[in-house]
Amino acid sequence: MGNGDINRYPAVSRVCTLKWERQVLRLIDQRSLPFKEMYVSCRSVENVAEAIKDMVVRGAPAIGVAAGYGIALAALQFKGKNKEKFIIHIDESIKLLSGARPTAINLFWALDRMRDVLDENKNLEIEKIREKLIEKAIEIEKQDLEINRKIGHHGKKLFKEVKGNIRILTHCNAGALATSGYGTALAVIRSLSAESKVANVIVDETRPFLQGARLTAWELYQEKIPFFIISDNMAGYFMSKGDVDAVLVGADRIASNGDTANKIGTLSLSILAEYYRIPFYVAAPISTIDMKIKSGDNIPIEYRDKREVREILGKVIIPDFMAVENPAFDVTPADKITAIITENGVVYPPYKKTLAKFLKMDKQGN
Ligand code: MRU
Image 1 (cartoon, rainbow, N blue to C red):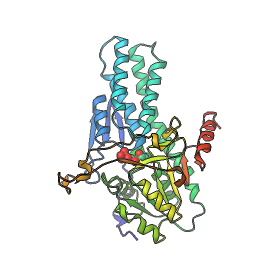
Image 2 (image 1 turned 180 degrees about the vertical axis):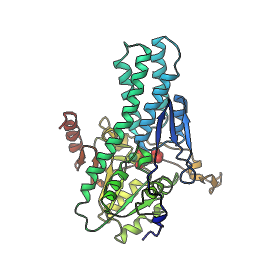
Image 3 (image 1 turned 90 degrees about the vertical axis):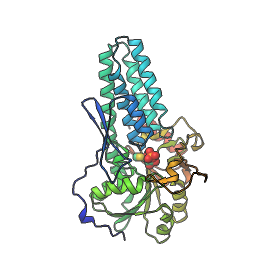
Image 4 (image 1 turned 180 degrees about the horizontal axis):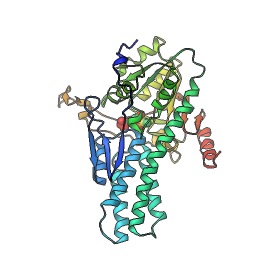
């Protein structure tokens, strides 16, 4: 199934989500993929905030990494010598970036790390604090890549028992484009593919922004991983035919009880997967877990511009006088999630207990 011509695929992965180059943040413009490979240069914190809002860069970990560089740029933008004013400027920049998108906790996680650097180094000269902020942004990016590779390593073990090559259904884009490279859900797929264990990836197109059809497919295409794209309403059909061994998705925020916010449509997939007794896995870095909130009810859901639903790639398909809604995320209840794959291992239900224990062990370095 899925008869795309894999031999036409370029041999080398060229996925480069973001690059810090001579004090400029270069972002691949994810709005124009897969048709055009263009880069947007961010030279100010305002540029970065705009890029996050407009989905030039998207995906929870990538948003966090970009925000770190946003603060590095804010520090570079400040020209005065008054430290108090410098601190106010960084605080305001953190506020600006915090307002860019509400759901993915990684944004706030990264901004908290940047604020820690500011707080810990308040006594140094502005130039030194600036250097430390830039160093931290680079560190966040590097760590993210490492984390992704570990997620891939832990995740592939879940498929040991599957006989033959594996067919995985994924939603949205939880790949290299959603991180600083390699991905979360796609990290697992990449690790399995490195051992030639992937039969097919079933890529949900992911209306309305089409992250699956445009971005996940583009990544898999680069790496010659076999896939085919379906429209979102076809998932149940393929599950009912026995063509799906597992559903594997990323996450934007995981509450302390395991409820997980991810791209709109994930909830329906989890319900289908439960019905057809297909394992439903979430792959995410530990920084996506928000232990401060009790359940998914406390996760803020972003509502985006209705034009995203009204139009497809700029072509209007629904006239203005018809009402539409555009919630960008939904929450999958913890009881639908078979396991959560992190960089430090796999966590199983009951998440209310296991997540707290897992994170405690993680802090103690076990
Ligand atoms: O609106 P997006 O494209 O930023 O949403 C992205 C997702 O929902 C991803 O699945 C999630 O951020 C995990 S990315 C590793």
